[in-house]
Image (cartoon, rainbow, N blue to C red; front, side, top):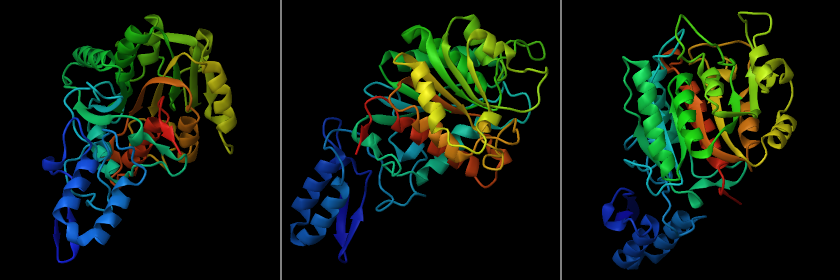
Length: 372
């Protein structure tokens, strides 16, 4: 954890495996090593001990290195600078990328979404200052990489996604998914429903994604929730769609959703107001059963998130996005995704940065997360 003391400065090496093991937390071992090696500098050691142990439980959680000691621009780009793991074994939650845009109907580029979200996530810190959530003190979390998709064959990609998520869910781990276009919600929910039965759904999006056929194809980013209903993957009385807007192919673009029993909250119902009261109603509707959260970044107005494939004006604000996710606290969340980040359409990186923060917020509302 701590390497050497030179010229009265502490030099930190958070990747030093001498101070880490599977059975023992890196922090405690690193401090023990530092105390032994640099006993002549107890005042400096005490300051470092206080900083490193601040708020930590002492258990073997994966705690990302703090930018107080390790430059954000250093290291391999994992989500939140978490450790990389090859499988979900032993994890409470895992970030996983699904880098596809083969199902996109307009602007491509979402295949680069997971990579850019990871890069921008270096700015994230360990605690949620708004809600006082401490996910890394209560959940064992890691980045488990990407599904090995087939960019030439969407149906094969769906099969690969479904099989990958079967394995993740079999370990008891909750997946936090970085898209990729919204097609991925269909095979993910196939795996989720195979484990939990029909689930509730909180779907935040500019579009309902309930089309039957687009250009003769049944699978694409405009059709996933129609397929999910047909296969009985959703508990339709516990489905809410929030932020829907834009032009449509018929006078009532959301008639099919309502006919299934979905609650449809069009964006006009969200303008100029807090969504805290709405989320209280949503929690009452969802109840204690398993629920999946699917958040399309185009739910936000393109002024805030231009880097997406099918932008629609007059959308939600980032504040409302946070209110929706924070409003999921206490629900039995069994999986979450953040999709449709297309970096080529936002050279500032702000869309991916927003996506990274929304994913962090999702982690903070998972069951058993500690709050101060």
